[in-house]
Image (cartoon, rainbow, N blue to C red):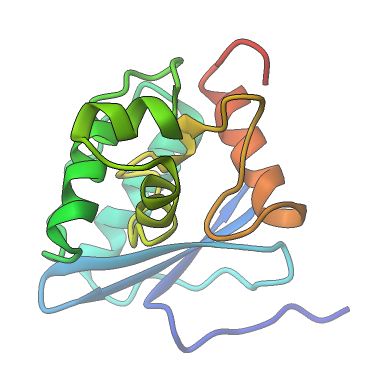
Length: 162
């Protein structure tokens, strides 16, 4: 089966679970996307893309790596509250959707929706938010490829039980 190409991304970095699509514009990171292994690697188009690709590779090699990238100012006020809590979850730990909701005075479903709306996963590690009784959904998906990515990320970060 031939590899798929994508013009949507300014770079595509191979990953153990498939690939990471990178999209930048006007000097900021707009999007990171989990891609299945059918996608062909794509060389970065400029210095920012090279830096994003370098940092993604660094995280994939070392779960303690800390991202330092210029991010697009996206999201609603509620989403940004959720993302702020997620950013504070240390590597190797998780919070449930309900725990995040309690911290910001919200509902678990709204937290899940904000996690799924995250444009820069890995940088804002929404994989560190799980269901009370298990792994939960990921990137607006309840199984398959995306759940396998979440499981890989939690194992990479040595979260017990995953």
